[in-house]
Amino acid sequence: MKLKETKLPYVASDLDGTIVRNEDFKILESTVIDIQEYQKLSGGKFFLITGRAYQNMKFYINQLNIELPIICSNGSAIIDPKSNEVLYEAEMNEQTVLELLDDATKHSLDVNVYTARELISLKTSERYKKYTELYSHYPKNLQPEFTFINDYNELIQEVKNKKYKALKLMYSFDPINDVAQYERLVKYLESKNLYHPQTYIQSRLIIDAMEKGTNKLSGLKMWCKIMNVNIDTIYAIGDNNNDIEMVKGCKNGISVGNGVQALKDVSKLVIDEIDNNGVGKYLKELSKVY
View 1 (cartoon, rainbow, N blue to C red):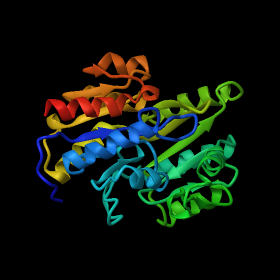
View 2: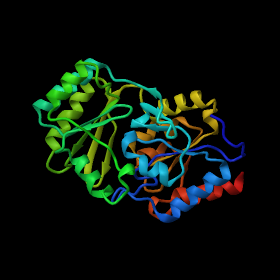
View 3: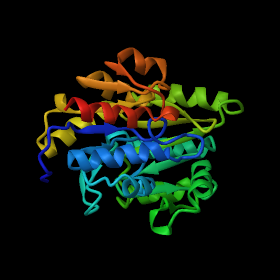
């Protein structure tokens, strides 16, 4: 993929908590304007790296004029937004997925399953209900698309039949009423030696389950290999625990001011908060420096 040559660097930005406000899933208008301006000046070098599934990023891809491949599902998939081609996917071990789904059935857990292209869910899923509430006013073609199952046993059979190749599982908990379930799951995922970053979004505790070694940094390294780009030239920005490996591993790893302390501790730079257009203002600074 060839882009217009400019001196401005590539910028890889997380979504939720970094440019997308957790409370309403919107980007400040000033941030949108500044990102769009950076896209013009750089020849489209701003792209996304997120824990989200590809299916619930479509509005932002359109809003921010993203043309570069995006890194989604916490680094386990890379997809070209123009062609929808899957350029890379890091599958979970099938037996592990089956065991996790069996565990979710036994303990009545709220879990979504991510593949490269699908976001698989029960209709009772908290995340499905929240996405429907917050995105209902957007054009239908830009709303998240869910693949629904009747129960986890149905999905277990479909995984066994090779219909779906899971990249990650995402669990949603009430941090007050689900403490015991949450603590049990964390111990269970640790016993499986799985990567399990945790984030707070809209008063929910979200936990991912992925293969160890698959994270945003591994995804960004693969992106650089595909795009023939030196990772040391990329500015990577995040806010939460699932950004730690990426920000720590990048020469230009950055945290927004509202980021968790663990991320700030490994960041090379802490910029302004999301509500103060932190990323947008930083892009303006980059434009002046280069």
